[in-house]
Length: 356
Ligand code: ATP
Image 1 (spheres, rainbow, N blue to C red):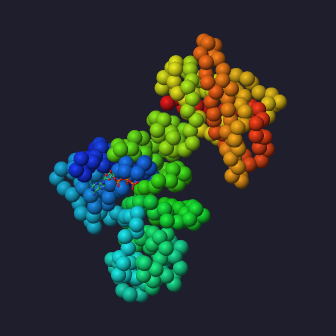
Image 2: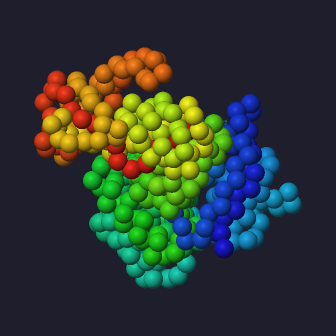
Image 3: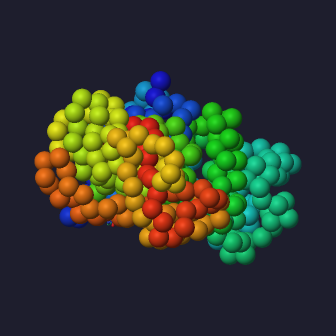
């Protein structure tokens, strides 16, 4: 059964349409990440699921029971949904321990024990229990907010940019730890993030929003490889979009012939490749010219384990006499065996292209 069913949700603030006909199913126990540019409606959607915002029209069901429809609006505190807002929203007049224990049932000893467990779960040192929220860093405040939400044993957890205040290393380890914690507890989780890499690695289901609309939802790999349009492709990662001629399941482009799967159109089209699908090798190596092309290295952006090579493909004339101006492509290359600046290299493709 789905943990949540969102059906045709609509919400306006004055003349701003924050949500426009949004429908989405969230399987029980799954992790869904919602991504989209600033102002695309992500927080509004999360607040609506939590019960802090109500739709102008549309319905929400949780485990098959209506939370919101034409006849009812179940209040936030009756939903058993945990919500960690962007800023943590801790009670400023309560200590860390009191924030986490707020609303916990049981006697003093049981409460103290549960608070200690929860602090441990979110990697907060026990000595922080007596601090005030203003004495914590942004990342620590976010973890207290998470512990406070976990204390309620919610069936669904909503996380709005919960790792944004953490530095890169801690962010990744916290993400993994929280993800495991929520999975082990069987808590259905919805994460809003600006970080596409975070969304791709965290989620079973990825939902992309733009201007209040849900543009595409599916597995991270499906969306990354087969985005519905160029904007979504670029939003989810570095993209190489090339004009091509599609015939059957082969697209012919400046990089030669590239296989495509179930192309949505034949003839003139745009195709998408990800930079990791391009491989650079020395010109003297044997290659099938139908599946590769030649370019000059015009820039090298070294980043340790990998580097980005800027390659300029020569201008050329197609069989029909059409002139294709020279094109510049960025290609990801390992940080070793880097070709020299100005050298000519062969560029080959791997895997399938996606027809946009
Ligand atoms: P961000 O990534 O910047 O947090 P978002 O995708 O979460 O953005 P929302 O906060 O949901 O976007 O906002 C969607 C739109 O609705 C925006 O144009 C925003 O200005 C508007 N909006 C949200 N809440 C309100 C409100 N209470 N009153 C008026 N407008 C609002």
